[in-house]
Every structure is written in C-alpha cells, then in structure tokens.
Amino acid sequence: MSIDVTTRSADAAAPARPLAASGLAVGHLRALGWPVAEQDGRLLVAADPWRASCAFSWSGPVRLPLASEADVQAACGIWHVHGRRYGGPTPLGVDCAGAAAGVLGALGTLAALWAAGRDGRAVHVRTSVAQAALLLVGQYLAAASTDDDWREPVVPGGPPFTSADGVRFEIETLQAEPWQRFWAGLRVGRREIADGWRPFQQRFATASCPLPPALPRAAARRGYTELRALARDCGVELTAVAARPEADRSEADRPEADRSEADGPGAGGPGLPWRLGPTGPGAAGGTGTVGGADELPLRGVTVVEVTRRVQGPLAGHLLRLLGARVVRIEPPGGDPMRGAPPVAGDCSARFTALNRGKRVLEADLRSTAGRAVVREQVARSQVFLHSLAPGKDREYGLDPERLSALRPGLVHVSASGWGAERGPCPPVGTDYPVQAYSGLAALLTPPGLPATPSLLTVTDVLGGLVCAEGAVAGLLAGQRSGQGQRVESSLLSAARLLCAPGLRSGARPVTPGVPISTDLADLAADPRFAAALHHDRCALVRSPWEFTR
Image (spheres, helix red, strand yellow):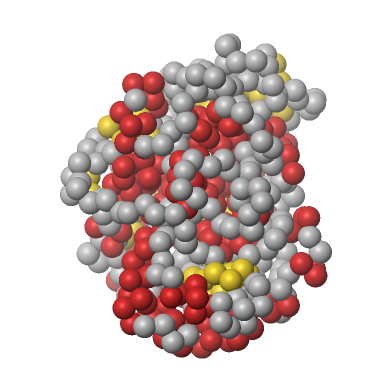
C-alpha cells in the first residue's frame, strides 16, 4: 500500500501543521521501497512480516510549548551555537532540526522493521524535533556542563577569507606544518601564525574562531588563483564559498579555479543521502529480538567501528543507542581526542558525548598484527563502520570484497567527506569546506551578509545520522535478500539534504513563552530539559527514540 501523507504534529497542545521531519522520513522510506501510510499523525509501514510505525512531535520529553522549527532552534541552543560567530543568537536559514528528526525517524523505523522481521511483532517508534536539535548541539552541551575550569574564549568572527579578486574561501588542514608554510608564504609573522592555529584547530569544538587580523589581511593581498597555487604547494586545501546551492546556480557561478576538479555522480541514491548495494551472498543476522518495551531493536547486532572526529563516531553512537554492541578500534595509546578539553572525569566531555558505552580495543592498522585484530572482530560482527581516508580500507585489507569473503553478509559502511564527488584523491573533506562547496553556507547565513559557513558542525552531525540510517538500511536489505551490503555516506550528501527547497526556513517568530537559549550550561541545568538529558559529570543527550510494542 502507498498513499499520500499529510504530516502533522503528534503534540496534543500544538496546532496541526506540516513537519519537515515526517515528510523527509516518508521520502526516505519510500525511496527504499517500503509502503508508507499515515494514520492519526503516525507513519505506518506494513509489508509482512515487517511492521512498524513512527510518530513525530515537536517537544518530545522537553517540557516547553514548542510548535515550530524556530521554537526548537531557539530553545535548544542551535541559535546560540550558530550565533557565536555573529555575537548573539542567530537563526539558521534551513530546518536543520526538522531534517535531523526526519532522519532519526527513518532510522528508528528501519531498526524497528529489522526487529519486526526477526520475530514477526510490530514495533512502534516515537521521536521529536527537540531531541534531534539537542543531538545537533550535543558536543557543545557536554563541554559547557563540566566542572572543568577550562573555557575557550567565544569571540565573533572567523573564516572564510576573501582574496584580492573578491573570492571568499575556506582553508583546511588538519596539521600545523602546512598551516605554518601557507601563512609564511604570505609573509605573515611567526607569532600571528602560531596565535591563529589554536582557534582554527579548535573551531569544530567551540563554534568560535577568532583569528589574528594579519591572516585575513595577508589573504586579501593575493588573487585566488595565486592563493590556490601556494596552498597546493604547502599541502593546504582551499574551497571557494558558493554564493548559492548547486540546484540554484549555473556553472558560471563557480569560480574558474574550482571547475577543473573531478566531478562525479552525487553521493546519494535517488531520494537518499547515501548509496546502498549488495556485496555478496550470505546473511550475517543477529541473534537477539525485541521482546518488550525495555529491549532495543538492534540487540544482538555487533558493529566494528574504525572512525575519528564527529561523523563516524556519532554514527556508531546512534547504532549503540539502538541496541547494537559497538567495538571501537583506536590507535595505540587511545584516540588523541580523549584528552581534548574540557574534561569530564578523566575523558574529554566532547569525546564522551560521541563514544560512551562502546567497547574499545587498541590496534595499529599500519601493522599486520593490528589489521588482524580488526579482521578477527569483523569475523564475529554484522557491521563494519569506518571513516578511513579514500583508498585506505583497500590498503589495509578492509575493503568490502575482502571483508565480505571473511564475513558473508557483512554490512560495510563508509563515512567520508566527499563520497565519489571529487575523484579518487579528493581534498580534505571536513564540515566547513563541504558547506562552502555545496552552497549550504549561503542558506545558513543571515540575510544581507555574504555566504558564510556556520561554525556549528551541522554537516558532521547530520552526516553521522545519515550514515547510521544507511547502516540499518543495509542490515534490513541483507535480512530481506540474504546478501551482504555496501553503504557509502558523506558529509556532502548530508549538506545536499539540507539544501532541499522544502527545508528552507523563512523569518519565523518564536512562540511566546519559548525561551531563547544564550547559555548551554543553563540549558543543561533547566528542569524542563531533564527528561531529555542524562548527567554523568556533564550533560549527555539521551536516546532520541522511544520503542514500544
């Protein structure tokens, strides 16, 4: 069955109105071939023996009268984090919380279908736009609510830079040496280069990037073509900021210097922000079932995770919240991000927000022994999730073909920056260059200002959500077909999802009585958010789903 869906809020107190969340979830489920109907504000999926339903609300467990995207963004801290570079709370121009809730709804429904397919009993899912919004600011919320005395100065400003010929661009490097070489090549002093590195490096964690004025002044003295040539010699990546999203612009809108880069097909399949395809025969099914309200749908599934930073760890975290056992592989000595301030107990609060509850093994993938550790774990698992640089999985013998031979039916999941978009050797793909390249930055910028990426890591978080969604879709496809699956997701696919015309926000007032958050520590202590947060030396976002029979 398949009928048109009229989406509306499941909050009894909220006026009936369309939800971006419901519409996006319907689109994803239908793109996967599932028949979706709507009844009493709940999405229904039924294709024997798979049966599940999903309901959305604005507030969920948050005790506030939220009734719109603007309400949610304002109350849940999105305006505050996004507005750090502007000096005060600032709305985003897209329904990012609604989009995240839509992915959460589709993800939860797919997990429910996986469980229902194993035991023949329907599973019902609830989630909310507010819980999705809290996930978007989860690492910032954890950092703001520790007892650690460390505080990063939050000062307006930051990239992008502007060249002498008027091209706005993002710069990216993950290492200090290329940063030093690039700015030294522009005759910036050693002190200013050093003073700029720390806020630049920390901007992913703080949503703030105050840079010495000497840096933008030096960039403004050179043309963009000259700057790109210097960056290439120094091992630094430059990405021009598109003035509008790809769907809204012509080829002429893209700077000439960027047009020569290899452009392949998009990173998502039809209607989906990830690619899914079979890798070989054999099913690696789990052993658990959802036996009641206290059991989670992915119980019995084991995930081996080899990831860094935000996107991949968040995907693994969501799979764990759905009930999977996650085995995280870290380098000898542990992930260096464990020590990133501020700390909660003996570990970084931000790291804890993304990785708590995972089993950790240390292994050096550059060694034969380290790779053997990973392969041993994969042989007993259903999902392998990685965010290795392009080609590294094949170099380490962890590519889909070899792992599928080791573990028939395996779901092999890749989380990348660019997907296949920019060729086999793409530039560094992190949040801000992806916002710039895709045109998402233009939609997130306040009216009247030039296109500027948000320092809120919006594509990192949404990228983690769509990666986890692809992983569960792969499990379900394998359950139905008996074949292993390969899933490819990217930050670029997440950015393009947010660029959809249906997710673009106009100017919307906040409902009277809804607070505008200006301090995440206060939000973490607010009793109205208590049911959505867990406190363990810092505030951590609880599971965004409720599963019932």
